[in-house]
Length: 202
Image 1: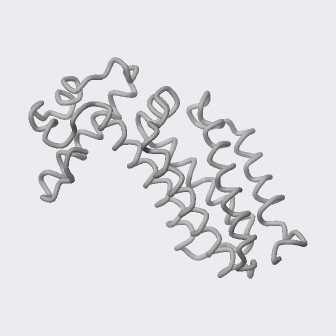
Image 2 (image 1 turned 135 degrees about the horizontal axis):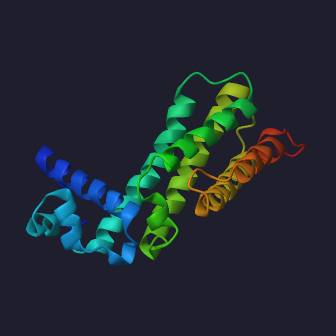
Image 3 (image 1 turned 45 degrees about the vertical axis):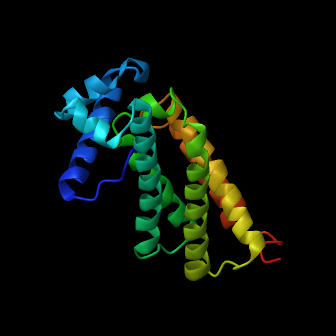
């Protein structure tokens, strides 16, 4: 973004621009979408659009950042609620929350899979994964007595990274997520993260 909006009206305009871009991605290839088309869809002038975004790529990047924030918020909403009786049930809720975000996000597949995140977003993407892993690790320690050790935190980070890639696989060719891949994610969580291996507390 060219500059972060401070006033409510400006934030609303930015939100409209991002929402309009997401809707356009449902109907057009990302390469066919330009700033004039986005401005028209958002019902703002091209000058207003350029007050906040230097070009369409900045809009795409901001949209991707917004989605990453939604992934994190979905995890936080699950672990902030009352935890279920077993970690496996927690895993199922976490997967369902991620699936809901991806299913309910216009333009997600059109941008994420056909215009991969630019290099400058890679660091933010990885930071979100680390934050998700920290939130899940804390819930497992607090709610189920898992070890609060560096090794178990590292394992949680690896599982989250693997889950992210499997979610990409699940949604790349299936708008609602390939159920077979989603089932495999649950099996991975149960067998790799939730099962108390002998070295979990080392």
